[in-house]
Image (cartoon, rainbow, N blue to C red; front, side, top):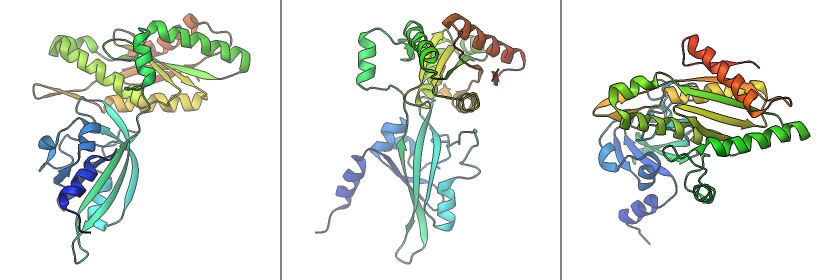
Length: 301
């Protein structure tokens, strides 16, 4: 049975991954409904544009811009080899989403490479739109602007983590982060833009932590993360990854790109800690980072 092009298009549009095709010049010629759902960009916004034109803007976990350096798609167009990579794409609302991308060449009847197809799957581990999120809403445990856990709820979880550390030796660390020069964002672009920046940072943080880690809006432009089952070395690595992803996120307002950085303090909990002593220590490390130039991770491990 010969199936129509429309059948295959509908099939691609209904799978749970993003799919797009590019030609030899990396101009986007097909953009699936899954790609729209994951990135926030509609087909009308991306078709006939180059894939690096402020659309996906892939970076790795060190913040390297892959679209201009080691782009898997561009490499496949050149050599015709399949590729797979773990990268972070730019969502239309500004935040970074972790995705697994798979790239394959498109060939003509003579076997020449005439383009490439990329599929990508959202690997976010945040709380977005699942049963847990709905229950947390009912319990008034979320910050209404960022949809992160609120301070009161995280304090309860933090106390439980300290008790587990004392009783069972279950190590954990915390990361205290603060958006750099946030007042300047509000003063320059207005509070609506400031809210968009807060949401962007919140989604980048929540989407790029492990399923059993927690992140809350602690107050204003401050965020607190509880990182479970971790060593000091791993805690620093996680903090630096998150800092880098925030730095490489951006929102657009009135044709202007707004990006921010965060300064972070990271510390491991001890059995002698209280919530107050643990948070105070991480806050002090973060403040030291502000004094040393911002956009850094200061730790004591």
